[in-house]
Picture 1 (cartoon, rainbow, N blue to C red):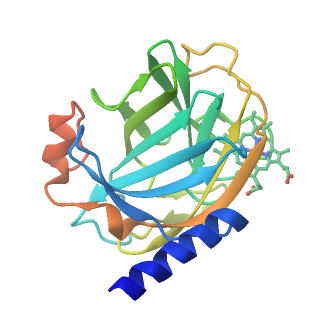
Picture 2 (picture 1 turned 90 degrees about the vertical axis):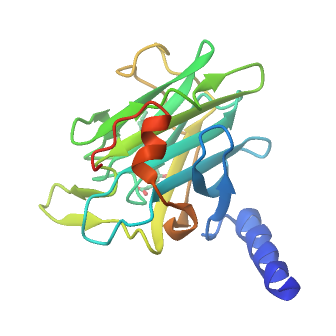
Length: 222
Ligand code: HEM
């Protein structure tokens, strides 16, 4: 047991130090009640962004299932984005930033490596909990319906695996969006990006739909 956790810890440290993919760990969030699979990504030497994903425990591969994404970032981060398919192009991008005492979240899609457009192929709902900005950090928590299955420009359908690891990518910038209150705002090019393997099984939740509703969301499957 001790040996196993030692190996996991060592792998996590090596993964962070060299930017290599690392499996996500389980994190229970007392505020929302979700158990998330969590990964910490280095945006700069001093800024770490936490990406968390919670899913239903009865989701199966090949089906579009809802996912709750929670992102926590220090205020030195101007925007933080997640690429659900592990690259910038042809997959759902979820991007958020601080806005006053809360966060703005936007759904985007890029057909090339240039500013992503607004994406309407999925639905993002900010939950009534887990969205804030204060003197040190900002945090957003959204329910995404349509982030785990999508069709790319070639017509090829991608399905994420609820029981295993999925290739993720993130990007971030130290500079801020031009209109922070608006989810249609433009935002500057990233300063950093990287990839990892996110183990969804660590964030499987029994009674997921009820948890979503308790946090003010409308699940796509009841
Ligand atoms: C202002 C908007 C953006 C611009 C102008 C932009 C532009 C670019 C450019 C020019 C590259 C190629 C650079 C290189 O290979 O060194 C790149 C790569 C990349 N970008 Fe962006 N980007 C933007 C937003 C985003 C967002 C929102 C995400 C994710 C949420 C993202 C994720 C990535 C990733 C992961 C790569 C590495 C190559 C790949 O995996 O496709 N980008 N971007």
